[in-house]
Image 1 (cartoon, rainbow, N blue to C red):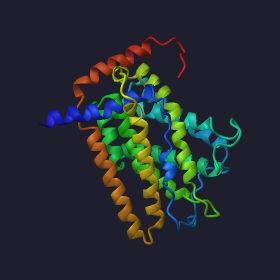
Image 2: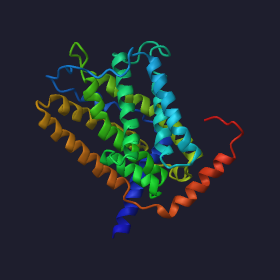
Image 3: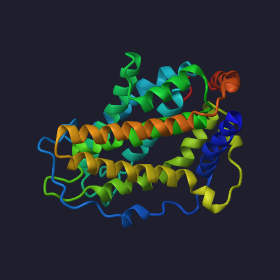
Image 4: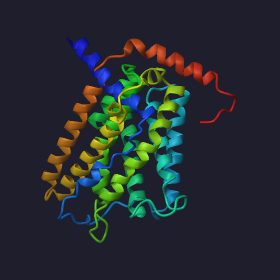
Length: 305
């Protein structure tokens, strides 16, 4: 029974990924219909990790991501899968900033740049804390599964996304502020990120399949239109939940109340991680590793990253 359950989980996780190759419906903007909660005020001391909050700050995030991903890629470390996913997503985000796109895509570009850096810092912090044995539960499950070779690349993607969106994103949103200094909600800009996710998913799938795991290509069947939107819609639902948890963190009146909300965030993200990693693909680790090293050896000398 446990083996059957594990197989069903693997199918459930893998099926939405096949949507990434072709999602003709694009980004269905249902989060725009869900308004922000009223009564939220700016944090007394909003986190501002980017000074000044300019596109060059995102360039610095991208450089740091490349430096973190490169040794993982060189070693065919399974953690490279999410590291590259995050890098490509951030590179896509960079293309939507005002120095490369007119008219402005974001209403509060400085705020979204601050969020980008604060969000990335939580990922880098989780990597460092994992080395010290104190990573948040969702990240510990994701990194343990990758280190032990118990997952395929599809699981690695969703384990990383779960930890970073469902666990880290509400923390970053609350720290930077879900309203600007005038009390205007930043939710419209939060929702606009879904457009970027829709734009980068195909490229992410192609890169991961080419580098790390042929299972990603094998999963790319011809699903129904509903299934084609599966992956994007799941990420959007996680992001909507992250916004609501950021509201809960922001509106918590005491440290104890905030700690209670944070404990719930940790519990839910860890529960999702356990579901995603439930299917044991230890038997597949040598196959995907051999594929990764073979593909690496076939790249031209000095090939692009």
